[in-house]
Image (cartoon, rainbow, N blue to C red; front, side, top):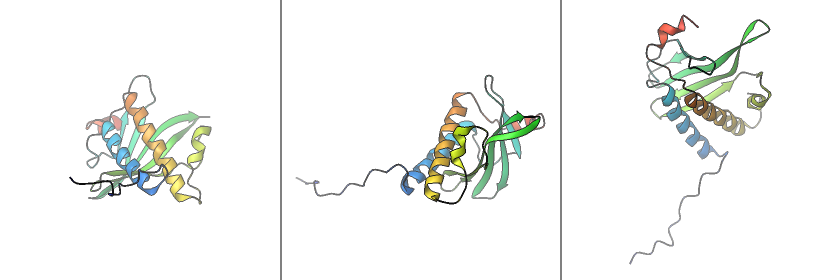
Length: 159
């Protein structure tokens, strides 16, 4: 009989830890795929316009063989000005299957989003907060019917 009582099992991932952050990046990547099938071959800008929610804008900022940098946002009219909020910059690591929220806009309109700033300080904590917010927002967008279609490039001109 083999006794396995002396085998040390790995510690569970602690929320807010670097390991948990990597798991969150993996989850973000999978959730992005809920909205968009191909994360590499993207038009410069496309829109998702489901009934009952604001139009969601996805912009390709930069593309290389291994990474793509995206901007995901809603646009609001604020005193006659078009304002993006939340406004996330996301880097997709294709070879690793990860998606990281790199930055948020510095001054969010909604007070609940203001804690996701990009000021200096606890970098791990800020990355955790930004990416947790992205994760929940991607789930929200999926639940509200957002999808980016391959023909979304034609709809970009209308936005």
